[in-house]
Image (cartoon, rainbow over all chains, first blue to last red; front, side):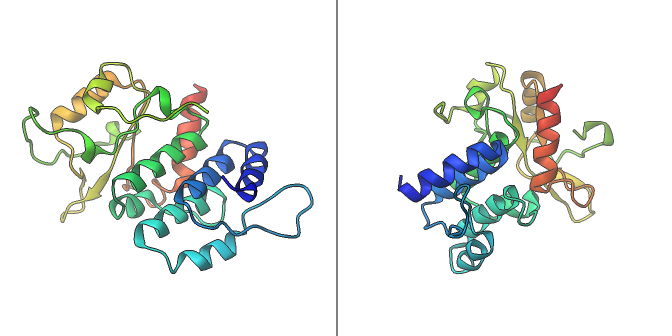
Length: 136
Length: 78
């Protein structure tokens, strides 16, 4: 990891799990993360510049970035829009970031997009209606 | 940082997972349905998971990143 990313992550971790999850997600994405150059108390993501740059990236990368920006409180995307358009690893990383942002440890549980559940011996059924008592 | 591992969900269900996220979409009649879920999957998840969070779109704003993080945080604090 670069010195810039190290500094970003160190500052993010001081800010809390939500910011740390966002920065970890961006570092995983592997893009050059724009940083505010005029801060004296740490290293921060330049969210405006990040959004501008992301418009040239792939759909999956843009969606991951949109989630990271939401975690950085620079917007608030709806996951029903984001999740449906992302592939396996992007999707998994997004969900892990959400879990981490809430202060949970995804390593002790399961983070499972539903389409990764093996269907093999599970009998098919029609769509299931969601009733109000099922809403979490 | 603890390593994040990807496990067979069916195996993990038996080990008390803490979180399952199900994605949903709206059907043509505007009812909310599970994207790929089948009833037996959901039953297994509900039986095994101590926390089940589904990404719902019944109300505008229900599944935003901020909303989901807040709801998960509240669950964790209970």
